[in-house]
Length: 210
Image (cartoon, rainbow, N blue to C red):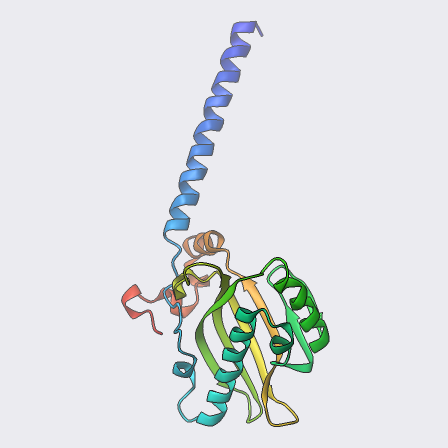
């Protein structure tokens, strides 16, 4: 192959690569721009206490979450840890898994002095359900932030709390799991296979419940 032909082939390959790169960038931007959640949740925990449930228990669970949020905002690891049972588990969105109140407390003491120093928590609530009279599952969205508080639709994590009535009668968190929402990947999967979308995300935006 003569030099001119080689040069022409290289130019064509570079042009094709540029087109593919621009196409991929455009697709990413489109997916990102259309990946809003239709059910962002409510900022008021009491709104998700189910009808027919013991209202006092629901409010006690909400109070535990409020105490958790307040402790984070103060950078108070001991108060944060007190919202968990002695043998609680805690899984972060990066996959770190803590076992026991002491482990959770000390891990957050370090976080509050470093990575999350000066931050606050924002949360919205999706669902609260009781599994018997002493166990409840609370799901919601959340994030830590500094500066302006993000709105419910901007929260990047989905969180699951398993709460139990502890031996002293206080509702505490027995297990926590934090998942980072991958909005572009989620949007792509819904477009590629619409049946994979949760029912709440198939509703028209005007029906985005609580």
